[in-house]
Each structure stands twice: as C-alpha cells, then as structure tokens.
Length: 198
Image 1 (cartoon, rainbow, N blue to C red):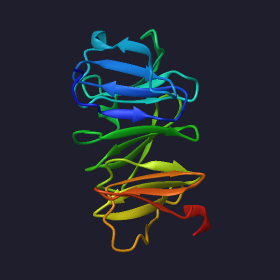
Image 2 (cartoon, rainbow, N blue to C red):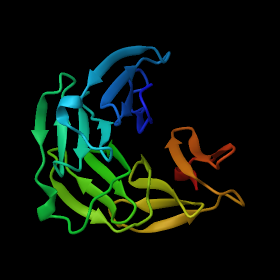
Image 3 (cartoon, one colour):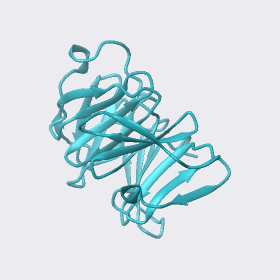
C-alpha cells in the first residue's frame, strides 16, 4: 500500500524508522514491529531519490535532490538545521542510494561519485573516492560494504580499502555489529568473525 520501502534505519532497535519515498511517509516501529508513529512528509515535496536516516539526537537527516542539500528535521517536520547548497561543492549529478550517521559524521553513498562525508551541521567535508558503494555499515574507524561480490573494509581516515575473505560466497549486502560480520549472499545470510578480530 505504501510502495517501495527505500530505507530501514535500525540505529535505535526500540524505534525503527522506515521510509517510503513514493508516498512521502516515514513510519516508526517499536521493537515488536508495531507502528508507533506515522510522519507525512509530502509537504516537503521530496523526489524518489530522497534518502533519510536517524540522527543521534532522535531527529532525522534527509537528503533531497530537488533542494540539493542535507537537512535535519524534527519529527514535527520542523527544520532543525540546513546544510549548504551542494552544487557549489560537487560537480556532476548526485544520485545517492544510502545515508547513515556514524561517529559525528553523516555519510551519503553514491555509486558513481563515492562516499560523501558531512559534519553534524550538514556541511560537506569531502568525498571518499570509492565508487560502486550502494549501502554501507560502520564499526569503529571502518566502513564495510559489498562491491562486485566481495566484502570491503574501508579505513575512514586513510581512505584505504581491503577485501575481506568470505570464501566462494558472493556478497550483496553487509552489516556489522558487536557479534560479527553479516553478509547477505542473495539466498543465504552468513555470519563471520568480527572484523576487528581479523
């Protein structure tokens, strides 16, 4: 009924955030997957390329290609802060596929440009030129992502990436938490030792 589910943010496992851009709806679920809030963001006139994620202060970040800037919104749809117009900073068309906040930074993945990095005021800082990233997850000073069937670990400060050994499996998506590295291989979910122990 709500169209394609674009993003599920599980940063706070007690308040899951689901984003349906086709109908401009954000849903908040509790840990039993019951809907606790529904936010209509149609007034923001978002495009289908919009991205959203939760912020550390229980607001949420939103990127919309029409405004070409990052914004932080409260759940009453009030703008808390607005970043700069990105046309001055980025050459080319920005078409992000994923967004996540980690360690006082907001990361926007664009498969053609790389990983764009912003501070907590929505200011653009840099682009990490790792192309082909559609989704990523973070642990400590590293980002983890799947590309060309492999799992990659990217050092966020140095910008260097290394492929991790997952055997003959072809990775499609990667998640990491304190229990280990999880790889979705299309028809099976695999768990590996925690990357910090490798």
